[in-house]
Image (cartoon, rainbow, N blue to C red; front, side, top):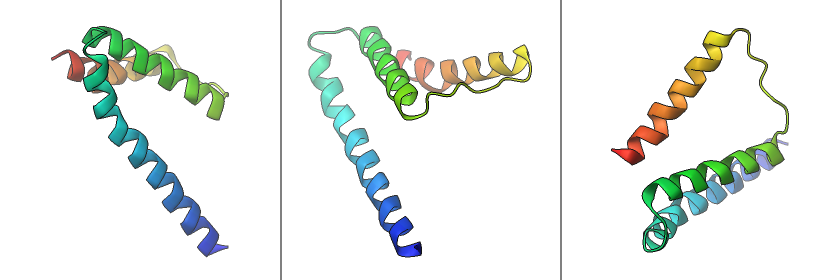
Length: 84
């Protein structure tokens, strides 16, 4: 069983590396047609849809303040990085 988990982990890591590596090339090509803000919105939309397909359950937030922390982390972690 351990060997099967190890192989599965390596497979998921390879898929992640492949997808991550192709985003650079895709972004370079898309910049000819779409603005950086459009690409950012497109990436968020695709990511959101994929996450819904993989894990369709919503996180249960204990309080509104926690939800604001998640939104701020998403804004600072990706949006500001690409905008600046």
